[in-house]
Amino acid sequence: MKVKIVYLALLAMAASSFAASGFAAEGRAVEAAAKNSGEAVGPRKVVLSEGWQIQQSGKAGVNGRSVGGEVLSTPKANVEGWYAAHVPSTVMGALTVDNGMYEDLFYGTNYKAADRTPFDESWWYRTSFDLAGVEGKHVSLNFDGISYRANIWLNGKLVASKDEVFGVFCRHSFDITDLLQKHNTLAVEVFRAQKGEPNNGFVDWNPRPLDEGMGIFRPVWLGITGDVELKNTRVQSMLNTGTLREAFLNISTEVANLTENNIEGELVGKIEGIEFSLPVTLSPGEKREVRITSDDVKGLHLRNPRVWWCTGLGEPEMYDLDIRFVVGGKVSGRFRRVRRCLLGSAT
Image (cartoon, rainbow, N blue to C red; front, side, top):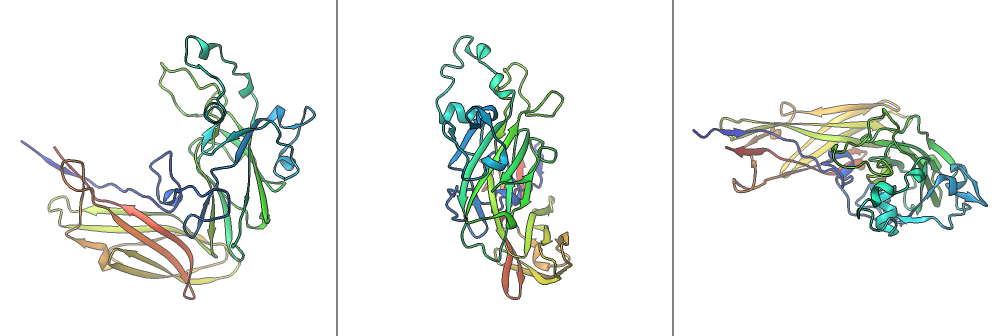
């Protein structure tokens, strides 16, 4: 007897970033890599992927004397002899892929004999970027994955320390609006995980990475928004598994007032031909989740929905959501795209 099993899944691709994970709406919807030229990918994101350099902290200095982030995050830092890198990349990834070091590492017993001591101390990642056209906007600096701890410096100022920036799969976001200059220098000191800290896992028959996976192994990007920011937008779907002829959608998003003033606006969205809006009032600095259900918007009760099917069983149908926060007729915050599906399979 064949039993058909239909279940729901939420897939999110928001105008954010990208590569190493099935990213949810916030960071991952835009991932075409804009170089560090200040050119935004879409209306609200600049990916910092190119032009990075790395160096062992004990060698990051002048005349054998190491210097800290207050110097390395400024143009006056001496970076002669630093290694070229791209982000995302672990330290070992940059040394091997970008610089051709550790040749024949997997030949014979070379890996066992390789020197791990350079990774006993911290390493620096450094890049610079120009950012134009952000007057009157709010800018955030976002890290989608750092292993394992980091001190983050921008233009000579400490943005966050390793006491708050730690955890392999944690995302970190910082308001850097007041720290921005015409020309900006970012320096990130990374520390590998220590014994007892929950690091990336490896199967027990593989040797541990020489650097324990330390580095900025997921994208770094700048978020540009108006006075209201939208984050963590997601869609929950409930499919009638008996008939496959109807589905109910619930939409939620975090809305944050980045100003010291009250803000009145509308949360406006569109899923194909379905349009909706909801008035929202935010007090100064308020951040909260706003939910819109099929009880609020009749159009979120879908009739004869297109169901996503696995290969060989049907078409992998998807729906796109565009959601914005509008104040006085102007878009203040936006997710250009949140993709969700109704997922079906049969056995």
